[in-house]
Amino acid sequence: VIRLRLVFAALAAAAGLLAAPAVALACNGWSEPDMETQLMCIVCHERLDQSSSAFSTRVRHHLDGWCRAGWSADRVRQTLVSQFGEEILAAPPKRGFDLLAWLVPGAVLAGGVVVAGGLASVWSRRRRGPPGPRPAPIDPSLDARIDADLAGFE
Amino acid sequence: VRLTLQAGAVLLLAVMIGLFARSLAQDRTTVYALVKDGQTPTAPELSLPRLVGSGTASLSSLRGRIVLVNFWASWCDACKTEAPLFNQVLARYGAQGVRVLGVDTSDFAADGRGFARTYDQRYALVHDSGGVTRRWGIGTGLPVTYVVDRRGKVVHLFDGVVTGNALASVLRPLLRGPA
Image (cartoon, rainbow over all chains, first blue to last red; front, side, top):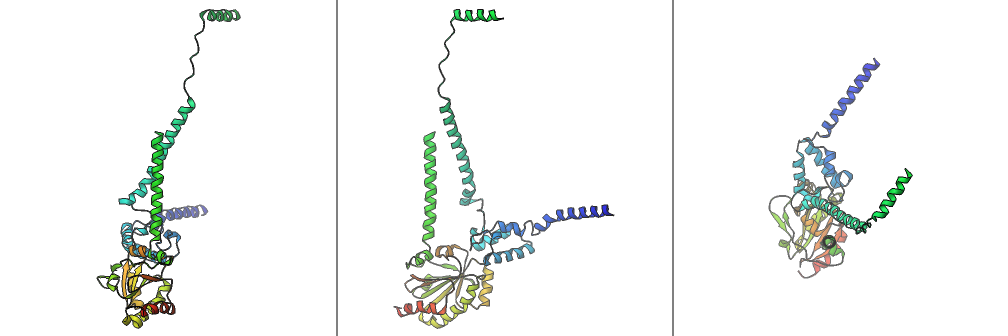
């Protein structure tokens, strides 16, 4: 009986885990907590999920209604932008002049890598320095004497 | 190579300083900042769609009158106490050329219309999606009311709820002035 209970408990837990994403995305492919992270309180300039202002409370109320009405995430965002401008979005849209906000950090990072690489190359070349003088060739008579001495040791 | 890198770094720094200076300059040129600074700037044009009904309402059409430009929103509790006051102001001083222009801002237009019905706002109401409010400025929050004189100059700013006495003390000298 205990084993059977354990099996049922495990099945119930698995069903709960499977159902969780469905609950979270109950709003036609989006969830209210996730949408709140994508929006700003335009009055207090905090992210909506971190704001308790009257404005944020009002937006949450509307999100709840739109979720129940089955609105898509795009429709929600477009409606909010048409009411409040792009200021309402936590991240700038990936088009027009705002695209720069996405491209510039990458470009700066790439530029930084190029600068660091260039500087590393310049410094390593300076440390290595010019090649030293080649050793002078050994005198053949000295070479023969060394060979003879070494043969004496064997 | 080194010279190119140095030139690029200097250019990047100059661009960043330029953008920062531009943002500072924009912040300081709002009507709110200028009036707080003791200046009486010319009121920027304000032409927005009416909140109730169709068409637009503009500040320029009220030139020659004393205009109270009141920025409000339906979610703003303090704005609820102001609505009846502005109705009274209009009833009392309207014949002397005082007008009220309510700008519903940072708000859903439908919520604003509901508020207008509930609080029986009898003055001109417009809805702003953000552009006009950014140009005028609302400081730390709503409500904010600007007083524009007959010459179109912003002569006073109420940062927060307006009371009858405070409003009367600002309006009286303006009403005594040249019409």
